[in-house]
Amino acid sequence: MKAPINISISDFNYELDENRIAKFPLKERDKCKLLIYKDKQISESIFNNIGSLLPEDGLMIVNNTKVIPARLEFFNSNGARIEIFCLEPYSPTDYDRNFASKNTCEWKCLAGNLKRWKNFDLSRTIVCKNQEVTLTVKKMQVIGGEIIAQFLWNGDFSFSEIIDAIGSIPIPPYLNRKAEESDNIDYQTVYSHYKGSVAAPTAGLHFSDELMNSLNTKIGQLTLHVGAGTFKPVKTETIGEHEMHREFFSVSKSLLKDILDHQGKITAVGTTSVRTLESLYWLGVKMIDNQTTDFLPQWDCYDMRDDISLNESFQQIINYLDKNNEENFKASTGIMICPTYKYRVVDNIITNFHQPESTLLLLVAAAVGDDWKNIYKYAIENNFRFLSYGDGSFLQINK
Image 1 (cartoon, rainbow, N blue to C red):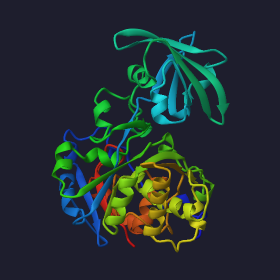
Image 2 (image 1 turned 90 degrees about the horizontal axis):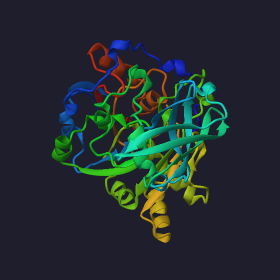
Image 3 (image 1 turned 180 degrees about the horizontal axis):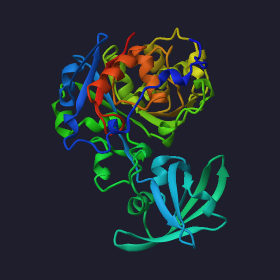
Image 4 (image 1 turned 30 degrees about the horizontal axis):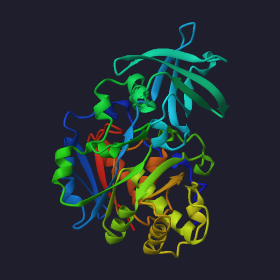
């Protein structure tokens, strides 16, 4: 399987009018439209009928990450607004430890209006649990377009409590509006649990508590913290020139075993779940070959041998966890799933409708081939709503 680095991104373009982009979700999140691609045929339904499409005795896997209020607003001495966008923990690097930090921690960040932030600290007084707190941010390093920022604050508060008090939910830029109070609920899945994402795994936004409880299928959970790179446009002519974003994930040993017990009947909710599950297979192969397994770069899987079964790969990871007395396998992935990729773990994908010329659309094209054009044509002609707050689809992978 050779890396398809010469694929032209312009081949994955389509016309998306602004009025097709859903600015807000439906009042009842599980009542959106559902496009169905099954046995290479296209039809439609309502999302709360999704249970009828799931394989009998199958396994549906969701991403239980929780979006953090990652946008923090500060002002310099002249009153110029400077926005700090938290991307991922820098010190401590572990998400849980960082969020639990008291008085100080460091993050990789983006800064809006960076030219107005010279060699001085930014501070503001906030109210956290009815107490006034002074939050200061120091610019420690600038690496490429990212900043290493140190946060300092007084009081017996965790960083999680601090950003909950000051931050706002980072809704996608293509919504062209400011976050509203309703987004604090609307932009979280009902099963969100572990803080860390700066973007929602939006396919899961269609599930209500009632729908989840009604499903007659086994449900597994993993955690992948979605980075801002998920919105990063492909600005190069070929995909080989595009640098894929890196995202942290954690998968339990019990889920690995459940996947092996449900092979051929795996439904992944969202592209983030897909990226995690497929990365697991290749990291298991790396483990068999005694290679580093804490990160899967974007093209590695295309150059690796493909004679290892899913059983062998996942069992190797399970054995590793047993040997080290651990319950969760943690790593990061930058995998680029695009046409020519052969799916190893996932059989069906529940996902939204993605932007033209995006890596997410490439992932869909890898699953359904050139039929992605027919799927998106049908969605446009039948008034489906697009992107994060839009309608959903159930895609059976062509294998």
